[in-house]
Length: 499
Image 1: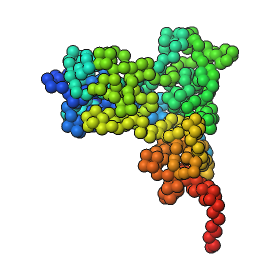
Image 2: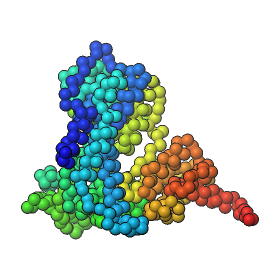
Image 3: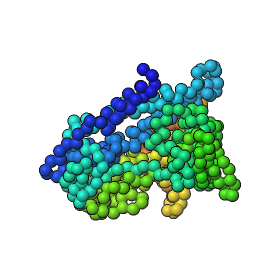
Image 4: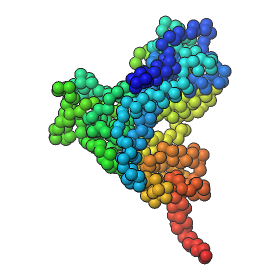
């Protein structure tokens, strides 16, 4: 069986799970559902499964495919590509590890995409319509919308509810560049349909999504340029973290152009010609594909929110700290309402909604401690406050930094680029936030997140024995540095142990 047929088979398997072609919607019951969930992405599915565990009668309405952006167009396929890209990067740097050259390093893009689709099809089983039905959840496919304060319509069916959740997620925001639509462009919803590796790729936007895919495609061999219309690279991250990533991208061969905006696109002899402007400097770049990664907008069009008395604006659905909308029967979760558009935040917000909507609890979204990670190489992970935020709030802060080149396991792995930086409240060991730049930063940040949630101070982390050698020892090293600093402040004499 050739690659195209195998890819088609994996796509058939995925769609059979998340949008079965022969699916027939159930007949709604006469009595109201306890919970109607509009949107079958991470937030919607978590809410539905949590609610049915409580004995609630639940319906899920999905416009496109179950699993939402994360499974179909986001986390799952992108991380599959990123993992393969790391393999190619390691092969190209084999001599650094003492390995001989000669390992096959030709990029087989069709095989790369085949692996991604195979993984996506496998994981789609978890979000399958059949599995949801087996759990007692009614699944409706179609354009769902509100028909009143306690009613929803989907594909001609009318569903009444006691409570409802809007979990419709978000979609890519397209930059308004003249000629871009006519020339054609990629988003995270279409880039995974590629069958041929573009030789030249322009990424518009220097945010996390753009950086992740830019680095992956660069490592596959695409000549990659990132055009960022802001003066800062990854503007929300700490400057030293962003600078390390910028240098890593440059070593991979990617070109980062800051303060640079795409102002016009046209097609010339089958090639896409993009006019760029940086301050008063005009330049031109010729590429095969353009990937846009400038942000996302909430999927709230066509929901008839006015009919339900639900307030909203361009940033999404208005909710209070309990994720309740202006209609007390209706809640919202995930990217349709939250500023932090991450799968794990969607999951957490869905659990808050179920507790509040069905159990009468008063769980607050503001109480969440939310980590996040940009999955480049090195990864950049963060939780809590940045130093600039602490200073804006007049919170005294001290920072303890351990460079990864001082960590034995990072040295043996050849992964010395990065650092662990932990911020604590001055005069105490309370952790305010942390930034980790390392190849496995996304895994490492969870220890600090746990400490913050459990109110475990940095002094306690100094007493936590870490397996040796691991890169997470950098966290304990930062904690030990804090303890030594505190001892010095108290004027303690150094203790010498004779041998």
